[in-house]
Picture 1 (cartoon, rainbow, N blue to C red):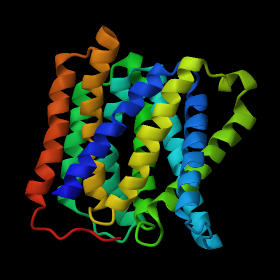
Picture 2 (picture 1 turned 90 degrees about the vertical axis):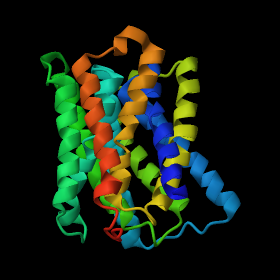
Picture 3 (picture 1 turned 120 degrees about the vertical axis):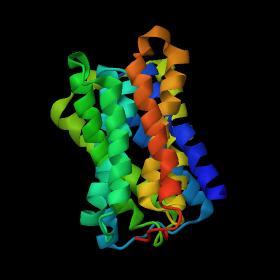
Picture 4 (picture 1 turned 135 degrees about the vertical axis):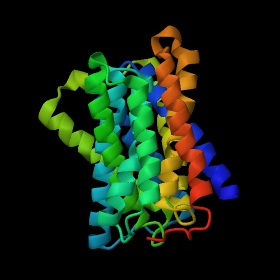
Length: 288
């Protein structure tokens, strides 16, 4: 129960990410670029003072960097969805991560297809469909958000393969470094210097995002996956949009007010989370 409580505290912290991304007026690239840079530097300092050996074999380093690339692309989609639509859309489309996990894990991991997990994931997807009814004005934000959820599912599955082998903060450091490299490449190819401009207020929110909502949850989530299955972690992340939507409404007001159908869909998302331990309580935890 302590691990589950810790997991949900981390989810609550993560629910602030979409809000902070919206509060930062700079471009999506700037948000992810500086978030990954600041978080990676902070983790390097932590590892330095902990005297952790940074050496990793070339093959393992390649896998960690690949996972970090997925993380960087996921964040670009996540914040991009919020920027062009609403925080609610970005957060709730993210809840389909558990559905994508149930489909991808048998392919990318060593887990058998579990129809109970697929049904629970589909319940979250139905909730998302009801929430938005795929309104045309939000279509781009929804599609980008769904792509981000797919990338997050793949990222989590690959990440679970590393949890037992390396220090969680060491993994986070290299993954965040790789995510920064992704942003750097995007900047060099597609963007200009002004796209990375940040105001003083932006920097304040960015530091909160990078240190409180990135360094702490990212490293701790890796440790939690040593005890809790990948699907359970991703299903619990379905609560992130629920927390985030409520917080966004109080912060942004009517701009985040959604329809009755939206909140009905939110109930289905919550139901998928709470049904999971009931339906699978006799099933041994997955180890990857």
